[in-house]
Image 1 (spheres, each protein chain N blue to C red):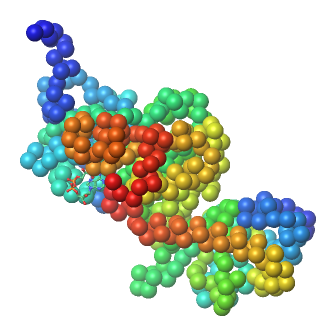
Image 2 (cartoon, rainbow over the protein chains, first blue to last red; image 1 turned 90 degrees about the vertical axis):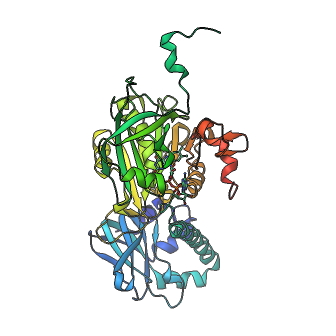
Image 3 (cartoon, rainbow over the protein chains, first blue to last red; image 1 turned 135 degrees about the vertical axis):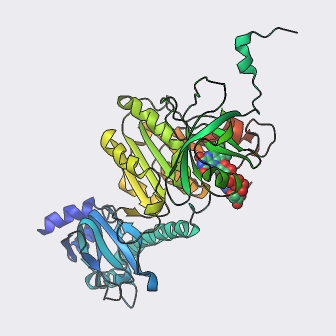
Length: 154
Length: 287
Ligand SMILES: Cc1cc2nc3c(=O)[nH]c(=O)nc-3n(C[C@H](O)[C@H](O)[C@H](O)COP(=O)(O)OP(=O)(O)OC[C@H]3O[C@@H](n4cnc5c(N)ncnc54)[C@H](O)[C@@H]3O)c2cc1C
């Protein structure tokens, strides 16, 4: 896909859509369009987290291994959302498996490439961190609610 | 003393006096939740009428009484039903009843969902767990006059796929009545292909015309609290948000004060409230 097209796709994604033009250009340099069939894995626990995903369509299930209980799906990530932040946090390894439960179209961003750009341009780095913090916060809130097991008793 | 015309006798029936009804059918929806269909067991043969969102007090003789929302179609005569989560004495006793067993029923009581006010608007229904039960009569009412409403969205969350109520109907509703149904569960194994996460997270995947949308919400209070925050964030005006509060109660007619908080009683001022009337409740930790 052409660079111009990628800019358009990035502009449509809520995570980065409103970034200033020069920052979008930085992202374009690290971005690639990807496509996964239902049942394909986007990432595996323990593997190097050298990328992350901006989901455009479809749905990815976040799976964790719960010992003898087997694999558990604890969350889904859908259109407009972000999958993965381990690319930013040492030791840069995935903490879960990500399985496409409906055909997925996404943009993948090269984590190493982006880390280098964040280190070089701290304003850009800060902007990315702010956006990811927002994702952390809403995930934490959702996890808290899930932990409460609100439907267990009335 | 004024004489009472014969026809008026029924209107003067003591609101604390139950009518007798018998169990027609019990259907298990999940491991711990069932729907009972009731039919009249006494001479009182007037049709049982109610509005969506209203509840009855179901009395198991020798055990006690519980407030239970009506979960059937208000416009389908002879199908009165309740969907009940088995949690304690009365609900367990109800779960064990057989066809023909008789219980006492007082009601219907309480306020109803704003079906008329929803005319011409999009309707966003948000339910958590057993909270779908009091909303089902609202959905049936909307379906009857489907053309009078814009979009109908149903966002529904449960603990796991096995805890979802009305599974067959959920599929039918989206096909037959053009309802946008988004279902999420808290956890699941790999056989579930739907959403996983809490109900408020579903708002991420829908676009609302906020000013033209009315929201009706029922579920555990903590779920409603987060849902309302999300609904307000989307710009739906507070006066277009309605909730059903199902905190415990005793008499159902505003005598005993069991369900009172501030100036309001859930039994006689609710259970369906406009959000502005109870917003303060969501800021308090406990009453
Ligand atoms: C207006 C209204 C409508 C309701 N509609 C429904 C319905 O459609 N389906 C349904 O399953 N339930 C509904 N409920 C809740 C239902 O009334 C109670 O679950 C029931 O009374 C419990 O009776 P029990 O004797 O089985 O439990 P108990 O033996 O009295 O209690 C068992 C446990 O459940 C808890 N509990 C009891 N009632 C409530 C409650 N209201 N909220 C939170 N915890 C409670 C108790 O604190 C206790 O821990 C409604 C409540 C109200 C006020």
